[in-house]
Figure 1 (tube, rainbow, N blue to C red):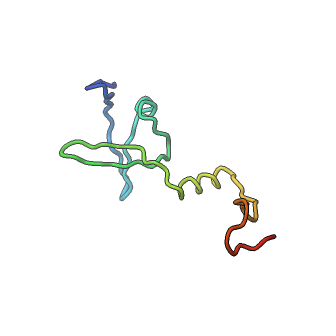
Figure 2 (cartoon, rainbow, N blue to C red):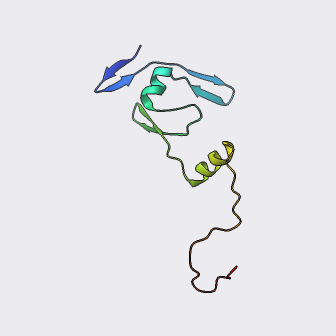
Length: 91
């Protein structure tokens, strides 16, 4: 059951492990409160006896990967940046 401490909702769960693979189980309520979704990348920081878990912001590589995983297609052969400057070739 969640408890609140300084406006932070706390839930208690166990860690699960199989061989070298470890899992921290979070309840649906905790996932909803934290804004996390399944397969989100997280950043973990440890300070004394506390652990802080933050959602990791997607970098460009992650966004491109997600684009293609969701069926995205890029079909343009060339991007038009406007008038030519310098030694670009006119088509």
